[in-house]
Length: 199
Image (cartoon, rainbow, N blue to C red):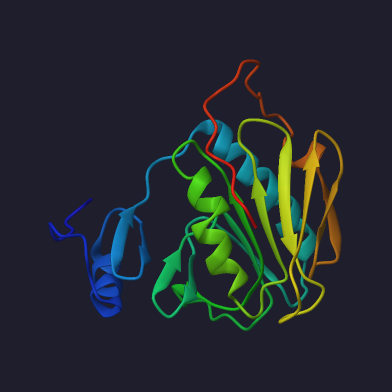
């Protein structure tokens, strides 16, 4: 970690001050600070495909689409940098933290897949405004969508493998797996996969 205290434990206020002066991005969960590692070209391409399509579809509407550099406050003591977010609540140009997302997208990686499918799933489902959380696999054409029909409603889950369309609420568009994985070379042989989860 870049310039972080040896314990890597901080209060929210300490984390926010530290993050402002750090050359690396860090996520924060209940006092623990985690440095963000670099991503593969494949991960970046998948996330860019999702962002490009949703950004284009957002147009001049009330919702804005953000890429991985924008921080999300998922709870009073949880801060993440999702790969892609759709936010329909007001956001000022100089804000460094957003709240009240409608859609959050995480692209898995070997080091984050378990967290994306467990810890982040639980945190994101606790956000009142959130309508959908997409977990996009970096190893194969697979998207797990957790969604609810209205803020505060019950959660549903579906998995799309190889083909299909993913409904994106708030923008009222569908994203195909072909669009998500456009130009992405997926492995022909098995790469290690994170353990599955129960939700």
